[in-house]
Length: 126
Figure 1 (tube, one colour):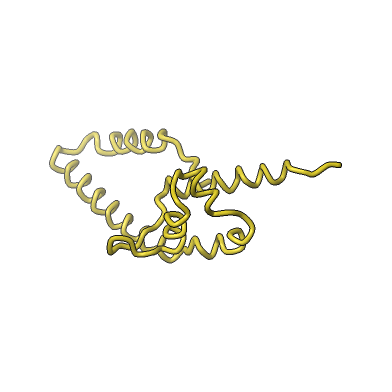
Figure 2: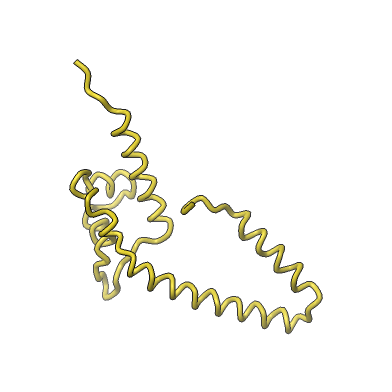
């Protein structure tokens, strides 16, 4: 699930890499690392492009009519509502479109889950 991956994943990956490349020359190992790094850069660019296509705005469309984005921005991000709206809408800031980072998406998901729990546990009694 998103936001639950641990650091052990990267440690296991590096351990596996060491096993696979143990018998290679330093030059061969460097070439593999270079190709790996280039592949990561390519993948990162593709993820950014996909991220642009995944409209957070569409996913939050109904929610924004129910809950206060100003509250979420201030309480969970320590930012202004303008900052959050810019992120949601992919606004151009300083000449570049702004998008949520992975950590910001995790924070937003946590905020929505926290608010959901608060609403779910609230009832009015007489």
